[in-house]
Image 1 (cartoon, rainbow, N blue to C red):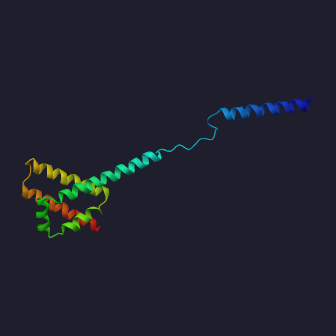
Image 2: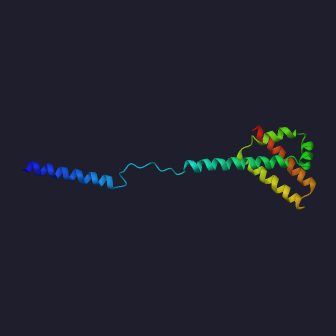
Image 3: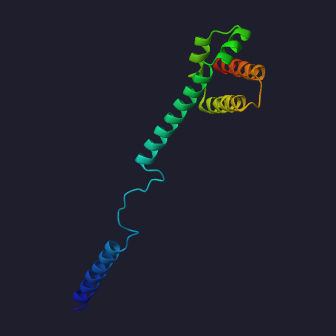
Length: 135
């Protein structure tokens, strides 16, 4: 009799533990949670690529202006070489130079700086591009 009672208690406890493990979400096998989903990662890469291309386009457009041509002449630099070097810049350098060049062009258009000042700013940007491309 004692053996049957012990067997019944063991079976009952096994059933209780099985029910507890299946009902408890902490013990269930869960799919790993990622901090960033693959879709978010892809969107981030697309945004970074788009921003980089916009910065490259901004610099190349500014380097095609007549003022930039004057700066190329003063620096004795090849415009095609500089425009190619733009693509080799890091994202941070590219963003910084594109921002500065855009700001200078806006100030020139608003009359805040003279033609000569813009040429000097562009000359500095051209030299920075060449310097950063060599590093």
